[in-house]
Structures are given as structure tokens and as C-alpha cells.
Amino acid sequence: MNVDTIPDFLAEQRDAAPEELQGQVLEFETLWERKLWHQLTNELIGFFNHPGSAPQRLQFYKTFVLEFAAKINQLKLVDLALKAATQCRDNQERLSFMEAVVKKVDNEDSQDALVFATIAVARVKLDLGDLDGARKDLDRAERVLDSFDSVETIVHAAFYGANADYYQAKADFGSYYRNALLYLACIDIKLLSPAERRNRAYDLSVAALCSSSIYNFGELLLHPILDALSERDSDKWLRDLLFAFNRGDLAAYDALEDRVRSNPLLSQHSRPLREKMYLAALTEAVFRRPPHDRAMTFATIAAETKVQPDEIEHLIMRALSLGLLRGSIDQVDEVAHINWVQPKVLDMMQIGNMRGRLKEWDSSVNQLGNWIEGVGQDVWAA
Image (cartoon, rainbow, N blue to C red; front, side, top):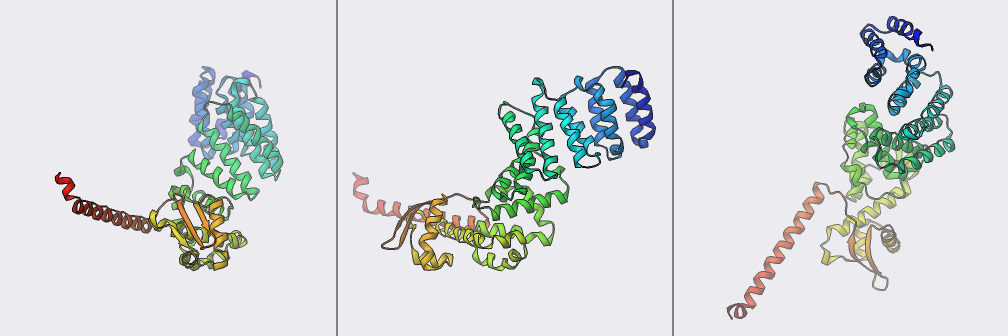
């Protein structure tokens, strides 16, 4: 557009804007004429963030923003483009629009903006069902990200968020879990709506339970996102289930089994879930015992875990191979010698058990001290 027509465009848009935004559009013209690009960019971001600006964003971007696009922070340019893209008619138009943005910021000095825009393209491809295309874009973005010493948090958040969505679409629960937690680490969860928090907490919980590679839910149990499951009675059971797994509580799991069966994904993974619960019960049984009393017979383990006696050896070997326990198995005497158990988050009941063990240890030390003092009086006197 010819520079002389910019004031006419802004006048048109001012008249079309909601009353509360008209003063801001008037300010655009002042900043444009004075070539205060930084201030103008910030004003535009505020304008685009206002819900009332939605019908005008795309036209503003194409007609106004692109006139001085090379003069502003390229990351902010992509941010404006993303907000404008929400007004495209469909995903195909949005894809073409964002691919043009990628070409616009593909410069040596704006690689962070290039990554940000590439991730946005990958997101649109996910929406279109092009998982392979999205994966290629995300891998390209990751290679550039890895070359940076530092980058804006918004870029990392976009990458982990898109990566999580990709792995969720692929039903790769472990990868989704890790990327979703990294995404949450990059954002302020207070900015998420209650529905977004509940959905993220729900998806993370199901992924943790269904994953074949996650046996320790500590990061999730400590994360404030999990509190979103306490807001509605219909979601509380899932939170309770996670804590039941964490403390190896077979009775609590059995009480929630109807809920598990009613959930399509958990129902599909009911057998691995049961095995995961047996492993949790085993590690909890080992954890409750003092370090000097961790030679456990197969019969003791069967009583603690409710596993059939002929499956105990396989259960222990599985726990050893997963790194949940360290030790050895005496197959002749049917005894497992455990010398280490994987640390995990403790609830109040488990902390109470640890407190009891510490008190027992303190009492043993006192008894030993008294015994040494009693039998060694002559030595002390000498």
C-alpha cells in the first residue's frame, strides 16, 4: 500500500472499531507518523489482544503491519501474525498465511522468530491431520532451538505445547507427558482458563497412567495443575487414583476400578495398569521396611502385592529391569535381597511411616549407646 493511503486506512478502521478501541487506532496514526516503531508494535499487540479487535486483525496485519514489518522486533511480528491468523476462514487458509510469515522472517538475524513461525505452521498441520508434515517442521524448529544459547520463553512454550499435541495425536503417552510438563514449566498456569487447566490435568493424568515408561508420578503429583481435578466431583477420582498408585494402595485401586473401566483409554490399558499397580505395591512394601530388613521372601511379597506365587519372580525381575529396585534374587531359597528403592513423592501416611522408622532408629541408637556405656565402663575409667 502506498504510504499516503495509510491515514485513510486507519480512519476507516477507526470508524469500524468498537468505541473503546477507537482512541487506540487514533494513536496508531500518531506513532506511525513519528516512526516510533517499538511503541507502535506494543500498541498493536494490546489492540490485537482485545476480543473486540477480532474482525479487523487480518486486515490490519496485511495492510498496516506489513508496511513496517522489517523495522520491528520479528518475534513480535510473528505474535501479531498468529493473532491475525485466528481470523482466517479455515485451516487451509491459515496454513498458507503462516507459511508466508515463515518466509517473511527467514533471516539470519531473526532465527527465533523463524522457529516461532515454523511451530505455528506445524500446529496448523496437526489440525489438518498432517502428522508427518508437522513432525518435520517440529524437528526443524528443534534443530534451530538447540543451537541457541538462550531464547524467549514464549518460543519454548510454543515448541513444547505443539510437541505435546503431536505426541497426543500419536498416542505416545510418555512423550506427551514429558512435553506437556515442560510446556507448563514455560507458562503461568494462572493464565489458563479453568477448563484448560482441567483438560491439561486430565490428559496428563491419563498419559501418566497409560504410559509404559512412566512409573513415578512425582512431578505431576507436586504440580499445581493437578489441583484442577479437585474442582469437580466428576474429576476427583482420577486424582485419587494417581495417589493410590503412588502409595501402592491396592485396596484404593480396587475401589476405583469401576471408574477405570468407564474411561475408554484406561479401560484399554487395564492389564498394564494392574501390572503397574502391582509394581507400585512392591516398591511401597520395600520402602516401608528398614534398610537392614529388606531380604523379602516370595511368600511375603505375594502377601503384600496380592500377586500369585508363581508370578512373584517375574514381578521382581520386572521391577529390577525398570530401575524401580536394585538387588538380587535367590531363586533356590525364594528370597529377594533389595538394597535400593527408587525415591518418590510421599503423602502424609507415608511420611508418618517414615517418622515411625526414624523413631525406631533413634531408639536403637540410644540402646546401643547405653549398652556400650554399660559394658565399657572400665575402659572409660582407664
